[in-house]
Length: 76
Image: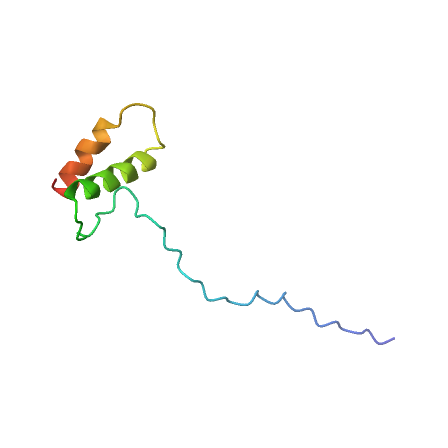
């Protein structure tokens, strides 16, 4: 009696997809922000302080430490 040999192949690999890099709306807190022209220098400090506060998990309190850190980073 002849035995049929089955051709067992490894499963095909999934197709390779091109990935599109995901760009966050705001940079991580530890990433320096490039200088941007701002009509009001206090606005740059306010924006950076908000980013730092959000990155810290929006803790309770007045946020003065985030403001002072933002002033140091922005130079305001």
